Image (cartoon, rainbow, N blue to C red):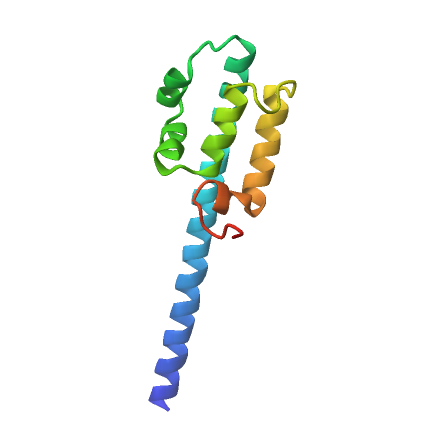
Length: 120
């Protein structure tokens, strides 16, 4: 009988840890998505202000951009293309910010920010 109780206790403890880790991972993803959305807003504003501030200054103001560049994440490519006016030339900074946050938080952020779970 004691072995059954110990087994149940270990199972409950394991499930609790899994839920806690998932909650922490979601919290981190949420913060990173919000941070990226704000950075993308700043990139789009700079694009509209004739590159003021420069992308190098934006990386200092929004460290997530530097992190994404260092890892070669897809979201860095996206921000760079917006900065270079190759894509989304006429989309407002607010629209880009809202769309990027919604895409990121709905699950796309795992791939675009962290490179995990990307289709091959």
